[in-house]
Image (cartoon, rainbow over all chains, first blue to last red; front, side, top):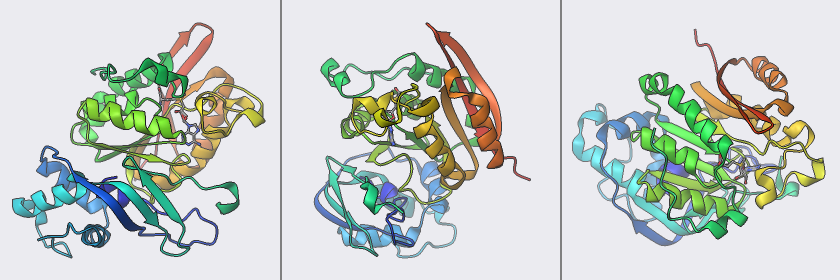
Length: 125
Length: 209
Ligand SMILES: C[S@@+](CC[C@H](N)C(=O)[O-])C[C@H]1O[C@@H](n2cnc3c(N)ncnc32)[C@H](O)[C@@H]1O
């Protein structure tokens, strides 16, 4: 699971949960895999994401080095920043671990890099 | 559009995961037909629901190297195969085991693609998480599709497009009606007769004023 994906995941379809966002990350195995740098894509996708959530997620797994906690103006012109954003969004991968719902504490296992968000019938809203 | 390489897949895995068939390729053809329109919109995020082997979403990712592709499937083996197919073809990608698109935040995907389990079956047959889930569609072959239709208005970006494959037995006109009530226009992208099955790919989008 890449952190760009984590940025879009919620547990709000759990019964009784209101926002279910962001999910906490617990990682037992993290890999960094090289991905071609595409600054145009990174600048285009950032406005679609929650930057603060990305920063906290990266920080919680020890990958927030040099990453600003809030977005500066004209970040799309700052290549060094875009490279760092590229790394945390696309290169850092949680292979094993789990995600935790911030409201209910329900855990979602991550195995072989794939989060399992399936719920049983009794858990669904 | 290029067809993704599949030589990394062990044929025996298709006992558990939907093997790419005419419907999969019709969906790829539909995207190809719409390529210019899609290119001009420069999508950032694309989701394939129920990606099975991953050929469709990988073909999309190969044609759009500046789009981040995500797939979901209820079948864990399909999630793994999709991830491998994307990796093997160098597509930047993530795979999540999920019911349809239920665990995603709202209004993010520029493109959503779905080739549903569309075969008309008893309701009881529908709703598993193994190979049966790849084809068993319940009443009208629409039980799974109809649940996704209710999620589309929330999960799709305001200016997003949803591509859906159906067969005649699914009564496409009813689907068009449901989506029209959600405020979506539609176009027929391609249709094809395969043996005795009339397959059709529709796309749905909102008019933004
Ligand atoms: C007809 S197959 C299509 C596979 C692949 N997209 C293709 O075109 O070759 C339908 C896929 O949807 C998946 N599926 C069925 N019900 C689902 C659900 N509720 N949530 C997510 N995926 C589901 C099945 O496991 C299967 O992989």
